[in-house]
Image (tube, rainbow, N blue to C red; front, side, top):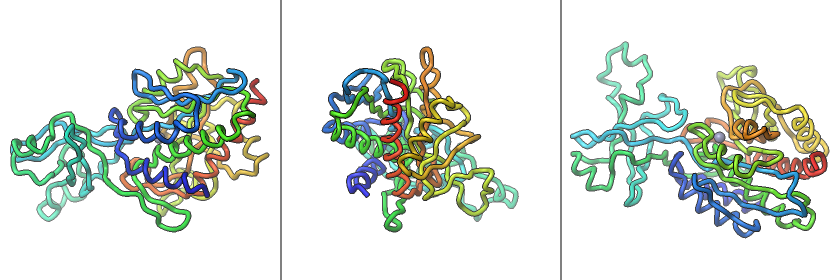
Length: 354
Ligand SMILES: [Zn+2]
């Protein structure tokens, strides 16, 4: 296990980067990528692009991981000093109550918790229902709107979940925003490995930290348009369904069985030509892998695939439990195998699509 992979995952997971406010993550990723690429650029949208130039430009390979995470947005401040909020990205209302959060203000971070009407005073019928996000609020300890404003909080401030990374056991870690900081950490390891063997690199590789994936694959749209790669790979997370109450057919991906290759999800059907190359890469390098098909979500690869005249695209996904919640769990061996599989895939793509 590469020590830097875990250290980077910890730093990236602890950083705040709600979609549209990726700044802190972008700066971290810039620091991590810079020593291992020829050039790092930032585009007008805020995507970060690291370039490693091989002997020729083609096949141009883009590897993307999104920097943003789901979160909240301050919508209104009540006279009594509570913050009402909107959701950014797909968040299940049931996971919001009593969560620790942090408001990202211009003047720094302000901690708070998500409050609700106490269950003791709910009517029997009300208690059975999910309390909707619109009925919840953030309590920062203030007793008036003026006090909230004095704390530096204003309407339009972004709010992130606040949970620090920790290791449950040797190979298992917990943290927020593994979707997709795990992908970002993998991206850095991929850059490092390519850079060490740069003389062997035939094509040019673009390592991209994208923005606003969670709100509609927006960063990937402009980054892919500008790079226009021959092949695009997204390193992202896959929903691991190996928990009580989930039927295998609903979510067959499991922790510890290796990265998942996407056959089809809600936005992408991987070209059989590329899928074959990815499977070959995994098998020849003896990397465990799982196939993901028919899942409801999608990734940056969906946007890459339909850019300009089309880009051969797919996903290498790290099995992760409880994504889009404040506490996600993954196995470091899966993360490491995702790095190995991405490198093996880059190698194969250079041979097959030259
Ligand atoms: Zn994701």
